[in-house]
Image (cartoon, rainbow, N blue to C red; front, side):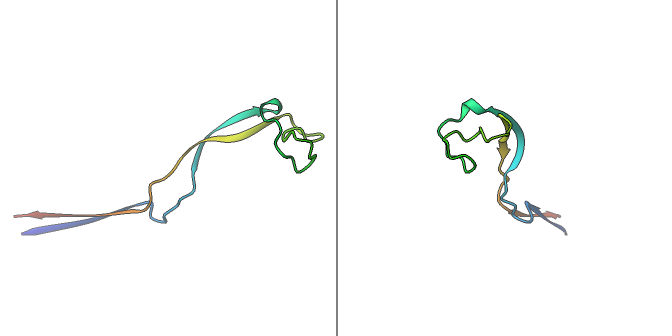
Length: 76
């Protein structure tokens, strides 16, 4: 009789951070009346001397939690 054991571990370090896959561009006029720490004028994307376009992360995948599987095969 021959036995074979195999252990597989996915996401070994249990990384729960999102894996970002794409970016989008938001124009200054798309977000209105949001607080702005720089100007407090109600328009979050119009800081003095700032860029009126903002590139933001938009698409992501979430990794599965750590998974351990044990496979045993017996040959007679």
